[in-house]
Picture 1: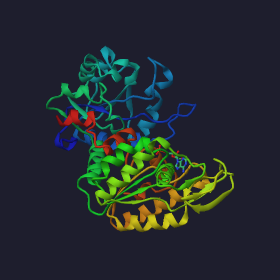
Picture 2: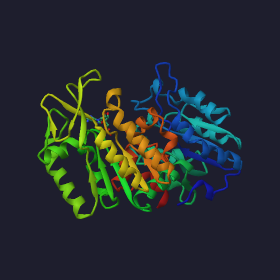
Picture 3: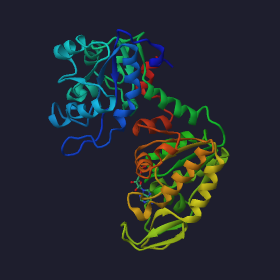
Picture 4: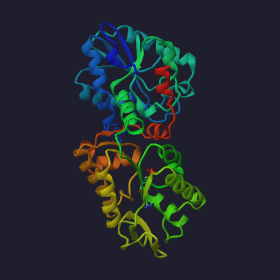
Length: 395
Ligand code: AMP
């Protein structure tokens, strides 16, 4: 795997695909700078070598040129994060961008305008990619969040740098973490899959069955499995058309010696609300009019035992409706169990949008081994797919 450590950037211009698709408030201020700070190590290494950085990213989903999606809005935060003045050019290709890149001195940084102001970016247009390629000597991909897209700046541009392309520090770390869980893992290996629906996680489940020793299934997915086995789930969320699939997964797991752990009890509520009445009930005996919104205490105790028995842990998806404080206990307890296992030497990877949000919200970020920066990209990796942005560097 070629990374920026394989190059000396002295006197060179690095064209870096970063993922600065960050949330902004109504004053266009950055409200979560995680993705900006995550790109810092790559930028710093290149500047310290005596090179310069041309940064390119998308922001949001603009329809043509729309000022609200201008990357100018993140300039202040970027300067704050990397501690130096950053030049900005209000285009990402063409004469203005080319002259800004040509005038860039070693030790300086240039941020290009939003790539998605051009529809060619998402179409993976080759001519557009070639124009981008004029802006640097070495292409660096450091954007895991968009590595599953075959866009011009994430994938196609790489072909114009046949001998001068590599992974940035962040993307290399993401690849290594996933590999450490899926391929080079210390046993026993556990995956915890939560979240709302079986349908969105089914390919992940199918792919990881051959990689894990234990699988905890929690969150809204639980009830499709419980109902499929004849349990009463009251008004809990369920995908009836996925019940056969749930039974198939249970069969396959058995055949592959994977132990599946489902909740045995749940916190049930009489409406989908934080002020609803609640009771803890057996997961197979949820009364009509009640819905399971979090894992119950017995389940959490079981999960804690499994988590602390394992040496490699992957966590994707919350155990309950953690956005409501009365149904966040399961997700918090699981976070504590994983933090404890990590402290005792396990490798833990948290990935996928909502579990990352939960980990941050409840302060587990520094207590797990690695928190992925990619949602869709992470899921597709767990599904066993080779991401086009990664393949383009490796080819
Ligand atoms: P996902 O994006 O598939 O990881 O799903 C995350 C969502 O699942 C979160 O918004 C949770 O509120 C939701 N969720 C977790 N447990 C349940 C449950 N028991 N019933 C309904 N939704 C749930």
